[in-house]
Image (tube, rainbow, N blue to C red; front, side, top):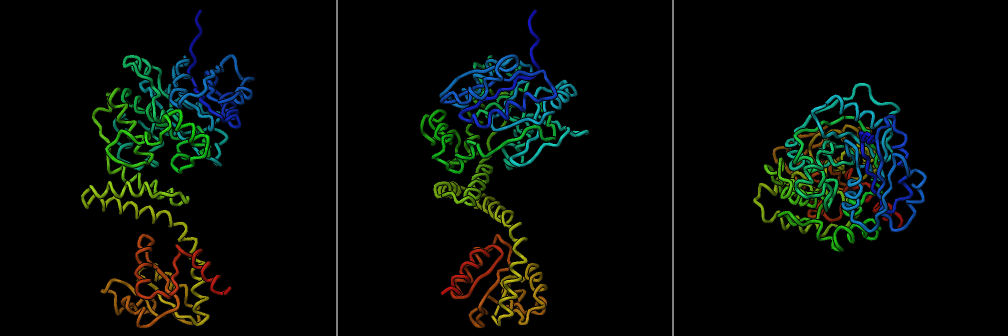
Length: 469
C-alpha cells in the first residue's frame, strides 16, 4: 500500500547558518498540526549545518546535501523531493508559531476552491501570541488585484499580500504547469519573487489569512545586505558569485530604467517570468513611476544608515531628467513626504528640548526670532510665556502675513534679519522645507545661530565647542 502524501511539504533551504537553523527546525517539530514533511536543503561550504541537523533526519525530515548552488537552484532541489499537497518555504532565519500549520490547514478546508494562501509575519523582537486568535479574518484577492498592487503601490505596504512562499503556500498543481512549460518554479534572481509571479500567472485567486504565523530575523537578510552595500559579508559574496556569476550589475537587468535598486531588480524578474509563464501576467506592465518612487525611498533609507548613495542618486536624477516636469514633481513630492514621515517622531520628541533651549537663550538676554508664521510658531510661542525676554519677531516668506501677529509677536519679511539682527533664529517650518529655509537664512546673515527640531544634536555640538574655546 502506498503512503498517503503529507498535507504540507516545508522546504528549509540553508547556507552557512548552522547557528540559527535549529530554531527553524524545532518550530516545525513543535507544530500542533502533524501532517507535514520537512526537507532540509543544506548548501553549506562545510558540515556545520549537518552536525546540527543530523539528529532530526529520518521519518518526516528529509536531508539533501547540495553545496555551492545559487539560491534559486538550492530551493528548486528541495522542491524536486517534495510530495506534499501544499508547498511552502521556511527560511533558516525564520520560525513558525506553534499553531501555524493548524491555522493554515483550517483555512484551506474553509476555502476549498482556493489553492493559494498567504499569512502574516512579524520581525525581530516581536512575539507570537500564546494561542491563535479566535476570530481570524481572511480576505480574497484575485491574482490580477495582487499584481496591480505589486506594480503600482508602495512595496513595503503591500508586501503582506504577496505570495512569496516564505509566508505563503500553494497547491502542488503549480508543478504541472511548470512541467508543461519546462520551467522551474524557483528561478533567478530572487526565487521568492519569481515563484510568486509563476503562481499568480496560474492561480486565479488567493486567500490572505490576517494573523502572524511566521517570525523573521532580518539581521541575516541577503537582500538587505546587498541594498546597504555590505560588500564584505559572506552572504553578499556568495550571492554575487553563485547567482550573479560574479557581477552585481546583473541584478538590475531586464527593465527600461537604469536604477540599481531592489524594486528594479524584482521588476526585472517579473518581465523574465512573464515572458515564459504568461497567463495572468500578460495583461500587465511595470510602472516606471513606482520604480522611481521605490528608488528614492531606498536612497533615503540608505542615507539614514550612512550608506553612500552617490551612484544611485546620479542614476535616478539622470532617469528623471528624461521625464516630463509633472513626473519629476510627483517623485519629488513623494521624496519630501518621506522626509516628513521620517522626522515626525523626532520632531515631537524634540519639542520639549527646543522649548528649553529657547527659554535659556531668552532668559540669558539673547535676541531670538522665529522663521515661519504657522501653527508650529503659535505652539512654541505659547510655551515661552514664562521667559523673561520675549521673542523679537517672526519672519515669513508670505507677504500676506506681514504686519499681523501671533501671540503678540509681529510678523515681517526675511530682510528683518539684516535690519534687526538676532542671536538665534528658530525654524518653525514643516520639516520638508527645512533645508531650503536654512540655506535662505545663511544667505541673509551668515553668523546667526539656527535651531530647529531637526538639527538639535548639531546645534548643541556647536554650542558646546563655542563655550569650550
